[in-house]
Amino acid sequence: MAALDPNKEIPQHIAIIMDGNGRWAAARNLPRRDGHRAGAASVEECLMVCGELGVRYLTLYAFSSENWKRPEAEVTALMALLAHFLKEKTPSLMKNNIRLQVIGQLTKLPERNQKQLRDTTEKTKNNDGLTLVVALSYGSREEIVDAARQLMEEARAGAIDPDDLDAETFSRYLYTAALPDPDLLIRTSGECRVSNFLLWQISYAEIVITETLWPDFRREHLVAAIAEYQCRHRRFGGL
Ligand code: IPE
Ligand code: IPE
Ligand code: MG
Image (cartoon, rainbow, N blue to C red):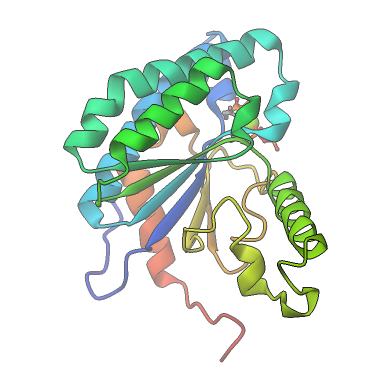
């Protein structure tokens, strides 16, 4: 198992594109939904490891704005899984001092999910350990367009001068306004693309792609990704 270097920093913010649930299920002749269900154990393990290592933010891509194109039965199963996960795990979020936040176009989710997400966010808001950010009905282009729309409205109302707009101000209009940018972006299942995830925020993230399918992703895979991060030399355009 890869070892972490105690003299090097742990990423403050890790973002994960949790991919490969369908292929995991297909390899076992199971319905895709069983792959999604199996992925919940990987989420739990990542929460535990991030908590232990002192990672401050973990952002998980759980459902994209494009995933609405999937068959209705799969979408329904994913929403049911989300509801089940929150119901089961809220006590452990409290016990482990984890704060839940959600990003995405949440009003597109079924009302039952929206309410539960609001309740859990409210219940965990004073926890000051790890912040778990779940991206749901999330698309980075939609997020950027929403920010632009809000800025245009404020400009039209005379509340903001277009000449004052800079990247720092713009980022405060994104769903992630209160979050630092990810340091490390992990994608499972070997796909080498970002699929409309945090396009703005990952400008300088270190990217690690692993062949491991999400339901198989365990402590050793996360530690290996962090160990790889520790070997990178981040320059941010400087020397
Ligand atoms: C990721 O697994 C979960 C979601 C996108 C909701 P997939 O369902 O995309 O699994 P593959 O890519 O088909 O294997
Ligand atoms: C990205 O995975 C979205 C999530 C993991 C939630 P997809 O499986 O939807 O992405 P593509 O279609 O392979 O790009
Ligand atoms: Mg996929």
